Structure formats: C-alpha cells, structure tokens
Image (tube, rainbow, N blue to C red; front, side, top):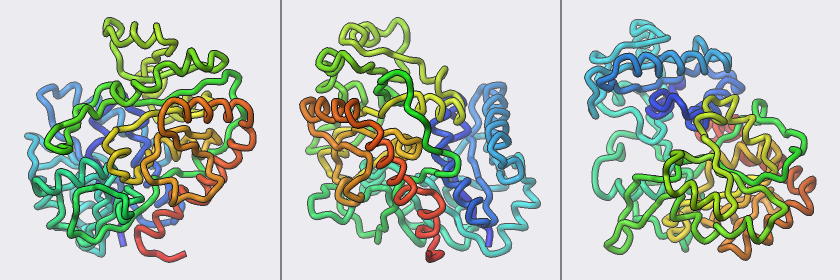
Length: 382
C-alpha cells in the first residue's frame, strides 16, 4: 500500500515556512509509522517561469533538509487548470513512470484541503478528504463541488462539528474529526526563552469569504485582534509581537506600534520550516485571535501552529471555538473570550510558566502527535 499525501499549497508559497510545515508534520508521522508514503505536491504554473523554478528548487531543498529527498513527486501543471490531468503535468522528484507504477497498486490518498482534483483524483483506490479549514470548506461545499462527490471518507479538523452548539452549514456527509498534527520527534520541548514574548505568525489581511446572515464579515487578523490591542499597555512587563505581513509603509504598522505591538517580517523569521520552529521556540507563549466565524460558529478549530507551539513546550492563549471540551483538563491552552480573560491568562503564563509549559508538551504528545493521529485517520488501530 502506498500512502499519498496530496497537497497544493506548500510549494507555491516560497517564503512560508509555517505553511510548508503543515504537510511536513503529516509526512514525518507517516515515516515514523514506517509506511510507504509519497508527498504529492501540485504546483500550478504562473506566467513567471523563473519564479516557478525558484519555488520548485525551494520545495526540493526543504524536503531534502528533512530527509524526504526520495519521498516526493512534485506535479508541475502548465498551463494551470482546475482540472488535474496527469498527462498534462511534469513530474519532478519521482518520475512519471515510477508514479504510474505506484498508482497501479493499492493506494490511499490523504487529500489535504481538496488539493488534488479529478480526473487525476480518481486514479487513487482509497480517497480521504482532509479538511483544514472547516468554516470555509463547509460553507463553500453548499455552493459548489469541493470534492464531496469524489472521496470515500471525510475528515475535518473542526473538532466540534457534531456538537449541539456548532453552527457550521449542515452537511449530508459523514464527517470524522482529527486533531491538528505535530510531529513530536521533530518538535521537542525547549528551555524557557530569555524574553517574556507573546507572539503569533500569520497574514494580517485575509481574502477568505464566508457568508453569515446575508453579509460577508471581515475574516482578517486585523479585525480579529482589534479587541486585544490594549494588552501591551495593560501588561507592560510582557513583549507583544506579531510576525505578520504588514508592509513598512502600511499605516497599520504605525498604528500597531503606537499601541505597543512589535511587528516582525514573517518572511525573515519564518521563511523555512527550521526558522519557523526557531522563532516559535523563542517565544514564551503564543497569543492569537482567530477568525470570528470560527468563534461564532463554534467549529472547534485549532490551528496546526498552536499544536506546534504546544509541542515546543509553549502554552497557547487563543479564542474559544468549542475545541476546549475535546482536550484533557490540563492541556497548556487558555481559551479566552475578550481582553479581560486574555489579560488574566497572560499574567498566569508569566507567573506559572514551568507548569503550563509541561502541560503543553504533554498534551501535544498525548493528543496532537502526528503518528498517533495518522493511525486513526488511516484506520490502522492502536
């Protein structure tokens, strides 16, 4: 049996070490399970062939750095199309002949965020849809074909999808849940950092679109962080930092600086998975706000980044989405509803970091470990 990990978002974002780290946790978990696993990365061609080649080169370098030099096939599709036909693709890494030989035998595809489309999708014997963003996936599945017709099994990272308080659009599919994956052999507990820094990494602006009661609310971090912008003044002993894509001349940078937030270029501190890990390890804790729709709809969403922070022994302060009831009582998280609860959680981290750090790492090992979760997703038993 060959396990294929289908991904269409890692190679195209050359500066995003955190983005590439998401499927990396899956591949490292598959390797720990000693499964015959191939990372199947789809890269759609752009008009800039030199930039495309730089993306390909970077993808190959990062996989080599993590011992996966012979475990991938990058599918370069030129011209780009929503229909994925293997005959129109160039195979990089694994040859097309070798790929076809694997496809002739028993196969399972873990299709992350519906990255692989028909007709190529139909060449896999067992097809598992793995949702990484329930609010957008569930919403758009009510509007268009998002793979619901072409998969045998459906998995979602929305832990509360079956909860009575979950407000996700109704689905006729049989969804099973999974926890975000953190490879706890790669992500190990680190010593306490020198600075009491609270940070997160991401995009300040977000173009996602989900309709809520006839309107399309702002899903950006810019909007989500607004209730928390006075935290640096309320807790001056802590350093609040955002590794966000905010240009130097963007008025947002000056506005945030004035409120006491330090803005860092994520393309500098998290350009590769290794830099991404180092940056997280230099923080005392992650503090973040998330898309309001995940909070309002009670999706139970937890980020892959939060799982990585926990594995490194860093507590996580984040907004409540309904995920809290699916975790052990001592888990390293502090789920908050507003600035007052966030302030109390931050002060608790400053006061009692060793205990919360230990809880964070133990929770990651018990709940978020990649090999443990992949056993469940693939139905391999304990």
